[in-house]
Length: 199
Image (cartoon, rainbow, N blue to C red; front, side, top):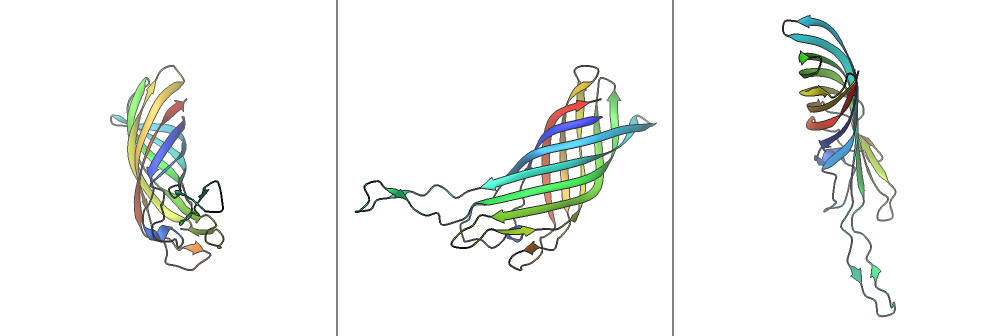
């Protein structure tokens, strides 16, 4: 079984995920991307089939300061936009994890619950700003526990609609950036995905 889904997640909001930024900087609140998975079903366990697979999540969020108001000048006939006072921000979240699932239903569709343990990385970057270059902070590769569930409904022998809701628990990480700072904190994010499955 191959899953291809679009996904969204609430982005971590702790300042420790970001390089130093001016007060009032707008940071991403959501990230969007894809969820790719592959699964096989091994054997029956009571009413459920036991499945084994893996999932890859890759999501990106962006935020920019509000457009500044134009300021008039006595020597310039056309008003010029004022310089921004905060930088643009981006955040990229990547997780890769094996999955063990319990699947309930028949060949025309089924629901499932699953859990996995893998690795994740959160990378943030601020744009060049205030005569300074771009800066980035990385959590490094951290442990990622996840659990959740979803369902698949087949519209033909080989194609199904699928959705998935998942909680990701990321362990603390050691920050890697141009300017030294504390490591990233333990955090929880929740993803929602929808797309198709092919068997």
